Length: 218
Image (cartoon, rainbow, N blue to C red):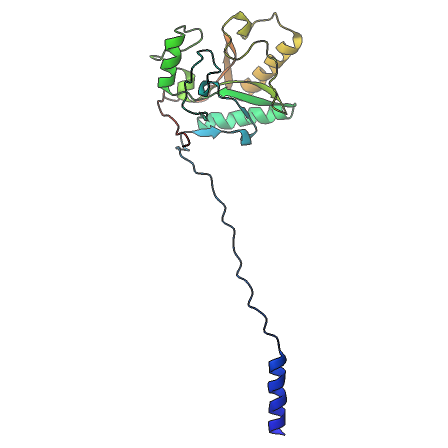
């Protein structure tokens, strides 16, 4: 009986199917974007942040008709960038978004602009520097939610009275859009200047002139 029982048990064992061991769990590797600048000093503004980015000085589509920046990247001081994000969020709730033309501008680029237009009404002398050189000034406008630029009466960098902040010989719609932009910017710490409806500077804090130049992709 003992031998027979042993044979039956052995036969049952042969009939059992061996299940394969479970595959080990593999955690996918998420590639993080490489940050190639000092995040304590600068914040990069990108289209994925909800802006329309059109950096004119990285192309020849600007008032000097020359490339001023080696590539199209835009930076601000971190506190100014946080304030600008609040402006954009407010405008998004009203059916608009910000279109950005220029932000931080290295001092050598300021010299190039001054060499072309040595008029302090429109370009700050390099010896004094610009708020752009400090990383707290922006040139911008309004766009709709599809990214189409809103008519503000003149193009960006239009040097004439029509581009002045207080110019009134424009349609009510254009004046309302200029005022909408101004109200939103000023509510979050930015200040405009008389001669350029598109220019705003962040006024909370003091920042040095800077010559740092961002890296360009290969």
